[in-house]
Image 1: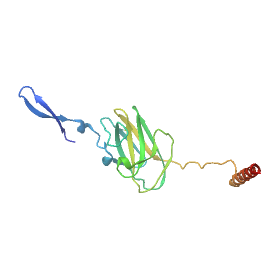
Image 2: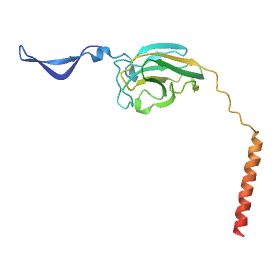
Image 3: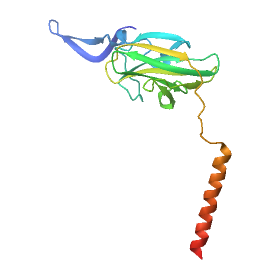
Image 4: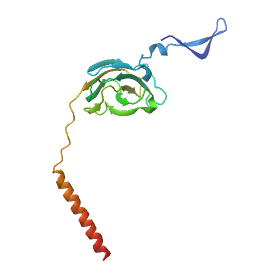
Amino acid sequence: NPLVMSHTLITDTRTSLDFPRLSNASVLQPQNDDINTAIPVSVLEFISGNSTFSSAEANESVTASVWYSVTPEQDGYYTLALSSDTAQTANLLSGPAEISQLSLLATSDQPDEVFFLQAGETYFIQIASDSAGGEFELSFVTADAPAPVQIPFPLWFYMVFAGLLIGLACTSTRLRET
């Protein structure tokens, strides 16, 4: 990234000439500072990164972020984990590469959360911070399917019980009317 000239002028006191102020912020910004420059990663990849000097885009609700994209080769269950010395969160989002149209699917704030992704779809991983950012370790790996929810009684039991409740409610209403 080249140095950027700002609209602020600095006057050289020796010559009284005005010069544009140079900013090196763009030199220090991570290459994946914006969603449109998200770095593609693979499933089962462990990523070491740094979000220091990152910024937020329009419509982002954080102070700073860096972006990755992932396109699974097969349907499956996955999990996301983030380790960081600073307060950062990894968010998995779906939708077009436009901040205002993304939907949150999962977050590293919910450890052990398992989610399903479709093959061929591109998803975005946002490493978000409300501070100055910092170094992080990200893992995006396959996971076992979540265990099915166990209900304590067979389905027919609930249907019979619901029928009895409806029958009692109707009987009660008829008794009050008479």
